[in-house]
Length: 173
Image 1 (tube, rainbow, N blue to C red):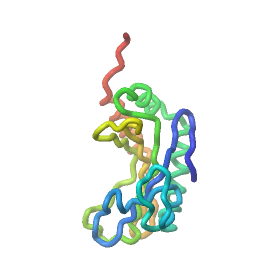
Image 2 (image 1 turned 60 degrees about the vertical axis):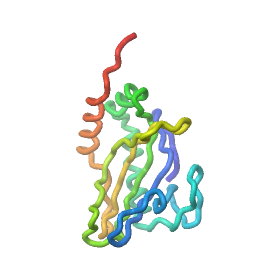
Image 3 (image 1 turned 120 degrees about the vertical axis):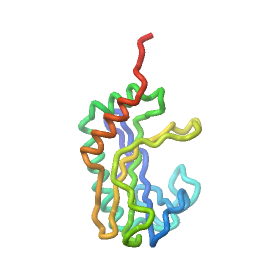
Image 4 (image 1 turned 135 degrees about the vertical axis):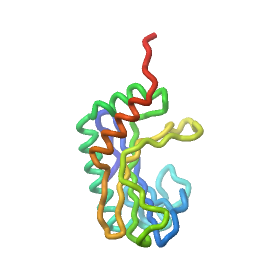
């Protein structure tokens, strides 16, 4: 896995959220950054080195999610294209982040609850130029049993349609 550009979209990075025991993750301290996080490694653009390495199950799931994201972007989804075309002034940019939640060391059940695999858009609360206003998140989950769950087509379609419907219409000048 590595960053790529495809059809005007860019995958800029990856993040791993390793949950353990019953405690929720401490963001951003516990997040592992990079496509193949290694303990002690400092990824460009981050402030602190990774505390540990990503698990083999998380990396395998991220690789599957990476391939699915690549195929999704290669299909040039018209709703995504419309959101980015109309939404740039509203904070939507064509930049993606691969996100993998790793629950293999989490308690069963995990009291805070497991995150769902999904496509969604994260926006900065406060603009911070020159940083982008947000990123699309392609979020996958590794369950306590080691099952890899990735965004489902129905969720993706629903989220994109709802997001497009919420955008203010573009008016001609």
